Image 1 (cartoon, rainbow, N blue to C red):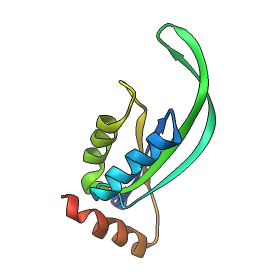
Image 2 (cartoon, helix red, strand yellow):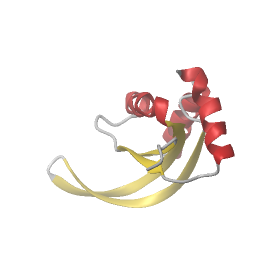
Image 3 (cartoon, rainbow, N blue to C red):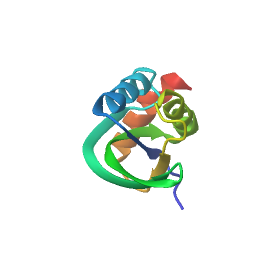
Length: 110
């Protein structure tokens, strides 16, 4: 089985500005090589003992395996919610040139 080199770290935020702010900081700190922001998306959730609905913006960050956990911790630190969704999915396959770009870009954060 091949080693996973690239990870996709995702979070949702209450506003597009929050998503952009997180993306700018973590890409600027070289914890992620790039970010995509999508939304708004309709959200239905259980929180503080009741059913809620709202809109959220998704920020998806591409990073190297070596800095994945630091990126996730930084996203949680920057996030406006006390217990934000921060998840990571391995990119099982991508072009070697793409993985090399991710690793090279995030190497400064090591």
